[in-house]
Image (cartoon, rainbow, N blue to C red; front, side, top):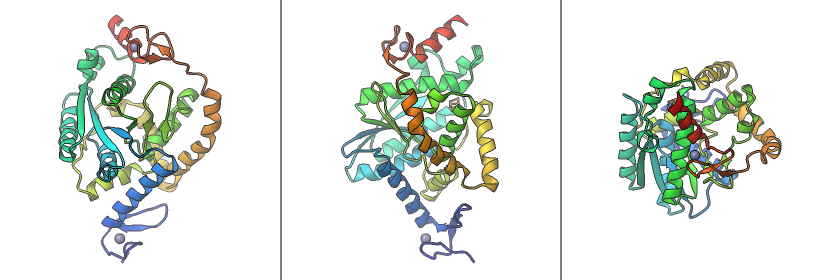
Length: 305
Ligand code: SF4
Ligand SMILES: [Zn+2]
Ligand SMILES: [Zn+2]
């Protein structure tokens, strides 16, 4: 019978297809934490004394991320705070907000909840019911980014940490490549820095989605497991299915996609780094590469539809 490759415990919870490694619960938890710390060190994601804002949806990724970053907080290496966004998605978002709120309270960290309705006057459901010529995720992504950036400024955060995992990251690489959106492709990476916004970091980007989920189960973390009702309609979901299917016979394909991309990223970045010079949005005054920022141009479009 198979036992843990590290300690010999016969109760294994994972056998990695790519390496053949089998791990028990404790060794798996330790292994994931070590991998995340390795990414943080290798990519220089965190400096001592940083105040990190976690984008906390209550889902498995952001909860696991907060759990791991909390170990740095406990050792007083960093300060932590969190923001949860209520997009206004009926029968879905409320549970995530509750889980996020309870977890932030349990850890005793600063936490705020910001809604689309309060920030922009519309819930995502209202946007999609009345004016939906763009996909839900386009509106959601742009408005969510705006709220996260504002929260980071308000809370005085040095960095914004998001729970993007290996699957998310490789989906983004493929999506932007297939759409020919090389400008967006140039912005993908472990640390996204710009002159005007708080840097964003992705400590989980080398951990496969399945393992992030298993980490939550192994640590008995309470996470929101439902998926967004709009998720099925997205191009990302189509890409996700293709990648999962390819991974069946090629278990390292996501990792090699990420590693390959990281190698060519520097060249792409040099080509595209001058494209986005920032001015100010004419309506809201936020940094913007055009006369209107994306959030204001979406809001304007919504008013005229
Ligand atoms: S799936 Fe799309 S609409 Fe749903 S929360 Fe994610 S980005 Fe927003
Ligand atoms: Zn073990
Ligand atoms: Zn604006």
